[in-house]
Length: 170
Length: 99
Image 1: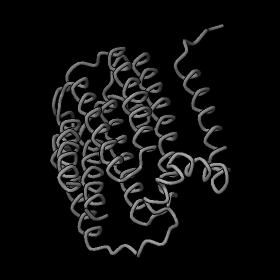
Image 2: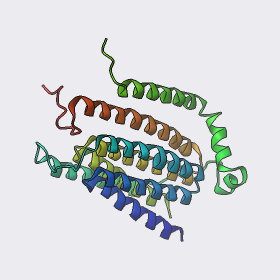
Image 3: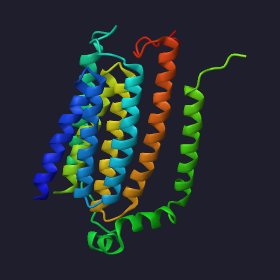
């Protein structure tokens, strides 16, 4: 049963990802990206990670995708007009992208994972709660990265305002 | 359903994302390719976290999410600023620093 759900959402994600790369209209590409995000959220549920699945839907499919669509509407860049100045660029890029995927798959398919030795078995997580466990980790072991994250978001906010505001010439 | 299933799917998505960054000339679609690559890495993180029975991977996904949100906000602001000054969104046209 799990395997059927995995293959369903995996094929959906791969087809939609190919759509993001191949479709010429940026709006269609953004909609394909939404399909990728939501199928990945389904896979996270399958991996018994409900917090990450919810965050995926809220942050990726919600915030980031809306930002993309907003900028597409703002700029209305139109349809991509095929190859540009360098004619050989596209076939070469396709070869390199495929080579990267094949290389990664060959290496990862032969990799052997060490035996599970963590303390968070699915049963234990169901008992203490996924969100509680992640929150406890965030505020103990990962407190410094968590605080640095807040600084990063502040810098991003200031940077966006500085970049996007109209210049006032004095 | 083993960890290899998820890791191979993650590798496929990463490859497709890299292909998108290399092939497309619209910076918006290139950003979508970067998002695909980040998502592929997130999937690998969650899969390893599940099969090693540790939550560190999920905490890392949380950090990657915030970095991705910040990166997209700044990147799209740069694209908007670029469109204002050059009236184009084609990365081939932006070659002012080329020798």
